[in-house]
Length: 177
Image 1: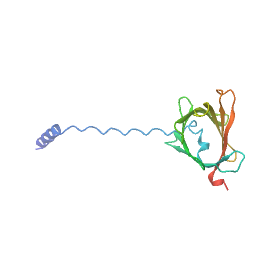
Image 2: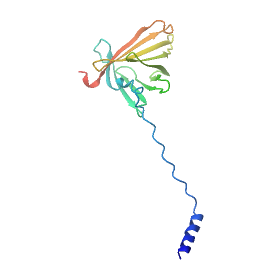
Image 3: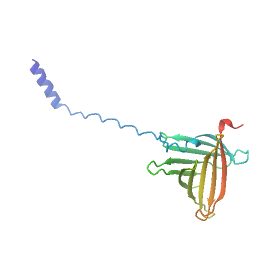
């Protein structure tokens, strides 16, 4: 009898379609938690932005760390005019930071750079339809009071000389009176 049952089970197994083993789930990508990925963390937060040296609110800005720490995303919300967004990330193989800015004007601007001398410095070519293209250098500096300075400089001679284009202080939203 046992021989008959085993023969029937073997016959059924031979007739049943083969089942494929369940593929293993891919391991999740490692989060971007290295020191290199954390170089721009000082800019993450909810901010109120004013010109350096003046107590006049000109914008709100939300800076978020996204995608497992691999991206730093800014949502720029000026009180006048239209806003924009920047996507920032570091290439872990080269250590170079990249920023892509897309605002209300057509097109996008790309910046590259890195953390040096206690600040993030990014440089890119800013096209302008009514003026010569400008090389823009932005320096983001964390201040002891928890604020961040974003100093923008422009050059029309390929970086030989620089002039301040904008100078903002980002203050944490909850500390502004």
